[in-house]
Amino acid sequence: MGGAILEKLNEEGLQKVAFKERLTLLGLTLPYLIFVAALIIIPVGWLFYLSFIGRDGGFSFENYERMTKSRAYIRIFITTFKISILTTLICAIIGYPLAYFMSQLSRRWASICMIGVLIPFWTSLLVRTYAWLVLLQKKGLINNIALDIGLISEPIKFVHNTTGTLIGMVHIMLPFLILPLYANMRSIDKDCLKAASSLGATPTRAFWTVFFPLSLPGLTAGLLIVFVLCLGFYVTPAILGGGARNHGSDENFQ
Image 1: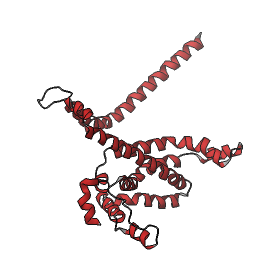
Image 2: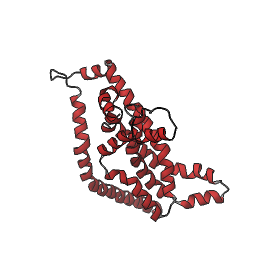
Image 3: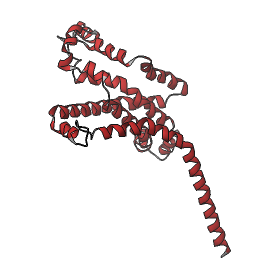
Image 4: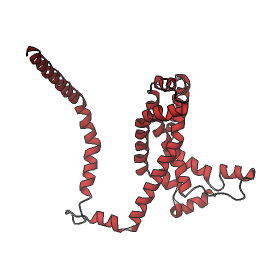
């Protein structure tokens, strides 16, 4: 009887200690939650509220009706999501092997490779985009080299289409996938792979059954970051995928 009472008292004491710890953590994170709310939640909520305001200043669904009935809006939404999904998939195909390779290197060589990943951030986004425009134009470096060595008989149009847009966006978005993925891969205990090998797993099976599942949180975070950034991207698609609107500028670069 006395043991049960002591056990109940211990349980109540532990619950009180856990409750105090949660209050302490809440107090520590509260300033940051307020900061996030002030910078993100409140502005987004205000825009969401304005979307229900009509031209007469009253509550209305006319903005959503115009968005769903206009073919131009629908086409823009489809193109935006298509480019965002393709860019995210290409970044995953290129970025995962690169992050895995970096995670297997020593700290010194991994840091050197990380410098290569971070170098694009040292250059303006607009400069990098126009650099791709110069490289991919019909009389650019890539087409000239391909013509000189006989790979093609006439210049290939890489810019002002989906191809040019994807090339530019993948180049800009790739570091945003590699950084969280590499951090996650680096934290994976290599002893897990050794344990899988000691139990008879081949290197390929150990990778797919042990390493890959453990790297999914980093991969998911990177994919989410890239996809969300692509949805709101403007500069690179406008320059490299301008189409007919930028036809005049395309002729100037030819």
